[in-house]
Image (cartoon, rainbow, N blue to C red; front, side, top):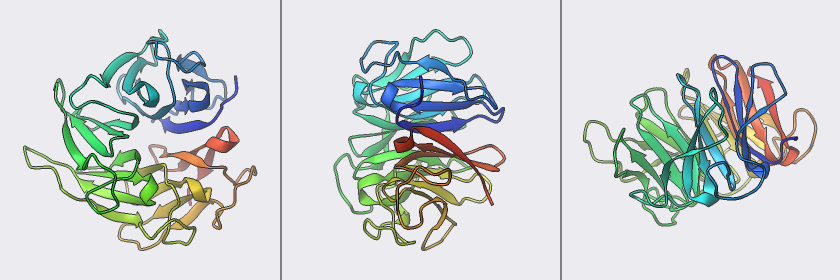
Length: 292
């Protein structure tokens, strides 16, 4: 079965690639160098069984175990599944019964201390410490807004190399927000800082249009953005006031060519930051580009 509307991509240091195949409600694993995938979770139908998904979005893969965590959006949960001992059965990590309740998760990630972070439809990012039963709000207010304290659909996010900051694709505010995370009992930040976009929806170098995901370079701190509505990937250097189109259409045109996109949703760099991987949702494919 071919990909149908892939939403996100994750590549391990060993070259194994994982793809959230959203339209097929499944997660696929591709061994390094192979275009033949294996289904890890999901049976192709949208439903709520432990072996099923409904509109999966973001994903994270554990570097040691290669366990996969997927934001199962319409099922209001985050599911965990092994990519080594494949059972096709997911284990729920957090869901609508958690505290606070998870509602429509978009992004999921762990930091080096095994803290779990989830962005959801409640306009926020929540953090759960290891073995915690109650999470804390670390970004957003829980209500829709466009000020520095709020989000309007926080989508797939990323942590910087130090784990001190979270960068959030604030989709309907057409911007990327950077929030300082609480450490050693410090209080969460009450506002974020716009580090890309925030100048209205558009295709100018200082604008974004419905960004769905962001990846932070672990070497330079530059951010790579799936600027979905503009059918391009933008790179914003640290402190930049505008971005550079490194893949896709600088003018926002959708197309099917090998260097083009149709509503790209996921963006990821390999461990050496040699390659850029893009989940090209509208073209039902994942594209790889050599970074210059």
